[in-house]
Image (cartoon, rainbow, N blue to C red; front, side, top):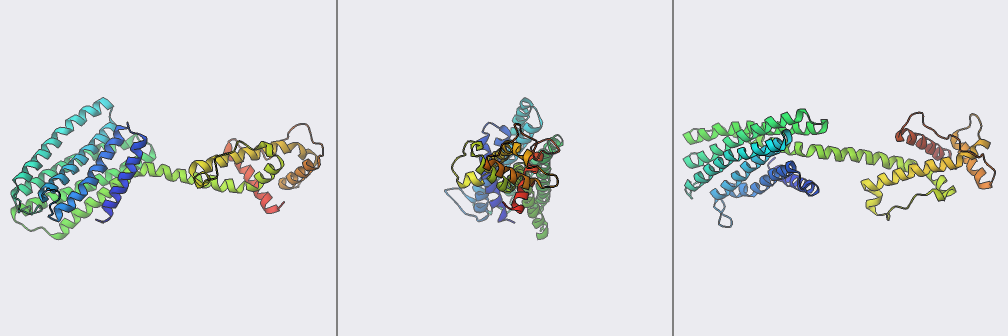
Length: 362
């Protein structure tokens, strides 16, 4: 689980930075970037503090202070995100400024406790009073901040569209898991400070809860955008399949009426052939060209139409008549007209005709 956390955090950081580049003025997105960035930057300091290592002149307790300060800043960014999501901008800004007060107090207490900790003391030795105060203050602020964020998350989810609401509820479960973990950690600090022993399973429960909570929160943050991408991928796959199934009909129409070809698309690069936009453009273009071809050939069906003969065979006969120069009716006639309105119904008729051409041969 501990190996999954940094990977998930840095992947999420890359994703939210990509989104921020597209919407740089979105204050809510900037807040989420702040959350994930603080968590990502805090992780190396966590490892340094746990290893009791000094890096670039930063003592182990200094690394612990930076790790916890960044974590508290991430909590504050999270509060800012949900305030701006659930409230009017001016009200959200005013409440966000007030939230800086407890953050400043908490970081100040952490700094004083870190400065009062003797250099030789283990940064995790909570039997030492400054270290115990350090951890109690950090946990207290995280419990406060995540509880507030969880409240605003659920409130914002009530009026959100289904996909976003699902992501918000998932994020709220993650926040609740982190709060539960910190409620486990808080008494362990007090027990260690008093000299009592803490069962290992109790600590492991808290660690599992906080890691699961963070992963669920990250999943909730990514869920709405990822859901849209997955939905878009489903449409892309459907258009690609229909594009290929229309090939027999499009081929005979294109060979007989090349003048109906629409303006050419960009070069056949892999991105154009299999990219989301490339497939959509080719799909709509093929549908239009197939329908234009049927309108042009439809007058020739008047002389070859026979009851009980499949439309595919009648179409081939009409194409042969057109190639032989046989006179046709003056007006177009309805051909492969859908019973319902809309593009999807039209495409179903065209695909059915194309499938019949494929199975019947040319």
